[in-house]
Length: 246
Ligand code: SAM
Image (cartoon, rainbow, N blue to C red):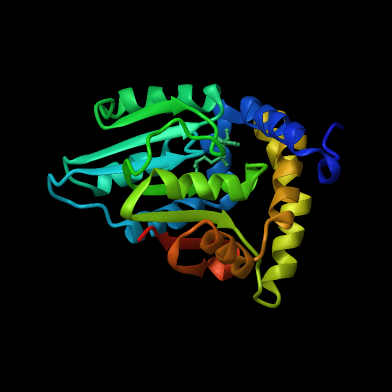
């Protein structure tokens, strides 16, 4: 297998990540449900509740980075009013293609648009967005500090940064079950549904390597954000980090 992930150089890491999402794009949404037992919906809804987009016609522009098939953007659009606009940015054209089909099916082409791009070098003007979200995406970005600086740059003053990411389970007992589940169950499940166990082995490994929530909060502060806070969801399986550009 080509996934000896720990030692790959940063440039190659992006290539491996792209292969992962190319191979799972069509089955991605189904896998999310199977692997999380539907919990990813709860976590995403927690993010939307915290985002709290206006319910009236007040203009509100969201940039959802590593937005994949658009899950966060569509959920936010459902919660928001008619002034809501979302731009989904993702490095993978296969994920975006699935997202565009969903937008058409849901009659949200006018509200949700899909743009190919890299979180480390966003092709958007300074201070253009009211909110920046990234859900289960930043872990895959080779240079997290660069992505955080870009998030800060494209937000208007007063704009909000929200990041949902797998984190560190710190509930005794649950941590053992979680380890067992992720190492023994996820790769075979991935193979059964997408024909690709390596991609899901990578997924489990990348979760282990991601910074602990306090360290990640510090990185968000280093990028310039203020009032940085985070909350653990589902015993720390996931963390929701928040910051403001003041
Ligand atoms: N946010 C969506 C969700 O929660 O359903 C998709 C999350 S998916 C686990 C991670 C996404 O990150 C993939 O669609 C992948 O293509 C994208 N990605 C990986 N590296 C990226 C980068 N450097 N810039 C932008 N997107 C990236």
